[in-house]
Amino acid sequence: MNYNGLLLRLPNEIKSFIAVFVLVLSVGYFTGLLFVGQTETTTPEGIEENYLGNEDVEDAEVMKFKKGEREMLTIIHTHILSMSFIFFLLGGILLLTRLPKKLKFFLIIEPFFSILLTFGGIYLMWKGLLWMKYIVILSGILMTSVFIASILIIFYQLFFRKETLGS
Image (cartoon, rainbow, N blue to C red; front, side, top):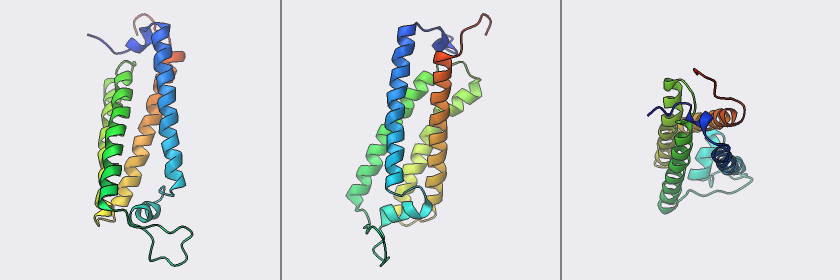
């Protein structure tokens, strides 16, 4: 079965359904990024402070305490599960786009590695491997970049690219 480019040939009502889903998914994803900005975890120091606390900083604007193991496991568990579903569904739609095979494979597989590196890195940093905060930043940036690229490709192919004979 050839599914490469199938998105271009779907009926308009299915394209609309996919477009609305990807739009709502994007609103949820970017709302999560706004939350990350609010918790000041966009820098390596902010990530460390958010999970390990800042009780030793006397003039801290906001006092933060080290998260407990139960809280950490809840954060890691819920994020890995929910992000896996997000990228599974997005990857399923990407499979239907017309893209070079290697690019498509990268876009659908990479986010799962970034999920493990980001949230596994947060846990390992919390356990004492402080250099993991840099891995968390890099994998989070890569995951978000792949998300943005994926939704742009999907929207472009849903609305602007037309199926042509022989393509």
